[in-house]
Image 1 (cartoon, one colour):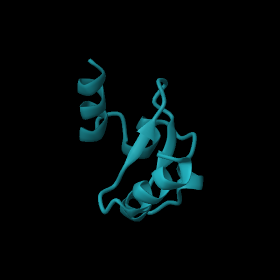
Image 2 (cartoon, helix red, strand yellow):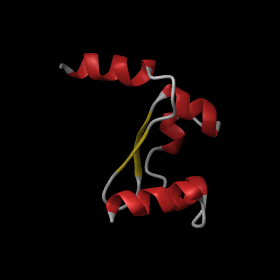
Image 3 (tube, one colour):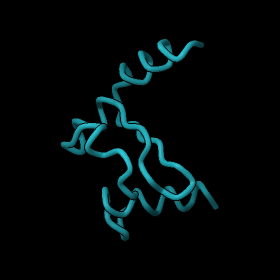
Image 4 (cartoon, rainbow, N blue to C red):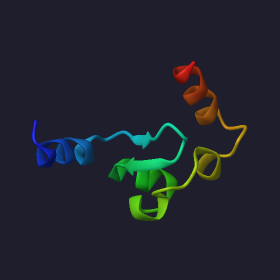
Amino acid sequence: MSGMDWQAVWQATPFPGLIFDSEDRLIEANGAAESFIGLSARALAGRSLETVFGAASRVADLVGQVRG
């Protein structure tokens, strides 16, 4: 799948999607995530998981579980 195809699918996904790097910095957010959080992907880029959701958030807990 080419980069353009990936971006089209990513943006068309109706559920909030976020991609964090290994240091828990946000590197990608789809349109549904922008709407859910209320900030653009550009404004979110580079922010930490804790900054976006809070250290004690359910999202932070889930990411921790996935990473093991």
